[in-house]
Length: 326
Image 1 (cartoon, helix red, strand yellow):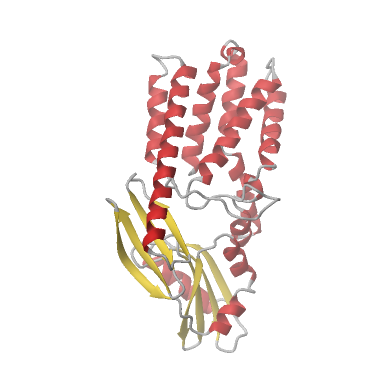
Image 2 (cartoon, rainbow, N blue to C red):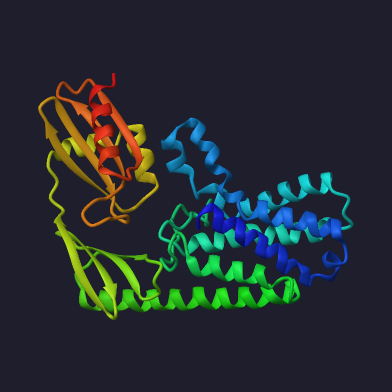
């Protein structure tokens, strides 16, 4: 989820904590718990400090160790410890428990979107994703807002217990439906290597990526059927350049963040552009999340960009900059 959604969810867990009579009967503990759940709900994304070392470091490390099972109690203990030292509260264990729950909920929701997390570190580097929720889910946001609006009229703990029971049911339904879609597509595309579902905000509409030995197919699944909108062959021009590009530190960082990057090479009069595009994110035939490596014709200059381009203007600016950087 996005940062705003995590903040809202943290406040929701803080309201749910009012079910605990120890918290409900102590104003200072209530304040400490709400602060802990809001911060805890965002803590795994504090790995943005990797940006200090550059975008490449952030791409390599985001949603990795900070979202792992070992990090969850560490985040919770650190946040609870700091808050406990600042507030006069009767119980550290209650503060820790609800902060820990908020941290876990962050990772839980992240597991169900298209990115996923490396939650099993250090036992496995595999990215775990259930492809069920869009990155920004309006249902999750609106249901939380509804709960906050009901707080003046109903008990906070009971209200948000009902809300979270509903949300877990909602996530379960979307996950089951995504599983059924994938099984159906695997039945019809028996030669596919892998099928990736990219959730949209609509419950019954999904972007689809299908990889075969020969090509990639992109389409939309809606109303029980798949519409293929775009395809391209897996033939690669200048394979030696592509292979060599993977040794570039920034390209290596980018490739570590996705299993769905694919290379495209475009020759220019003064060199070559190698595009590693993340195929999970598509706007018609444009893939905005990518890494671009420019190699001069004498192979002495190699400039790189990684990130997301939101417009054709941005794309042209990046291309011009890569060609002139020394």
